[in-house]
Length: 184
Image (tube, rainbow, N blue to C red; front, side, top):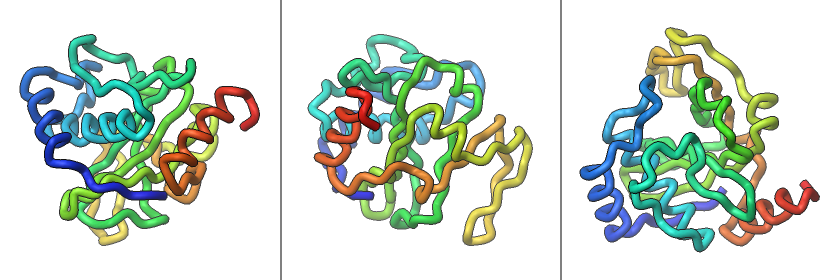
């Protein structure tokens, strides 16, 4: 895992995009504006780290592909948190998204109290489905602090310690290059 500060300029850019575009267009479990904003910041941070253009919101629904990197279709999944990320934390993945034409998932977190963006790790679609736990809609999911939420859709959870590890932006770039060349 590695963390980077989120600039005020990027927050403002994403805030303006959320004001002018609806990024949740699946028609089910689309996420509220705050969740969409969190996701957009995560996607934008990855774009910056990898030298890709920032999202514009002009293309409409992206069908689960946030970025294309050397022919690999990547979905950036970002969760907002109120604490720094821990190894045992889980990342949520709504099951209906497994049918999108995505090759790789980057799992990220934002600590809202410090404006720190953390890349927790990555997995291929096959690795996600193999390593994650599945929960039916309506299941109560308990957090480590004993609070809980009820799943609003069928859900996969994958713990940070089940993700492929990267400790820097350079390691993330190398991992994707190796995956794309077939050596991972």
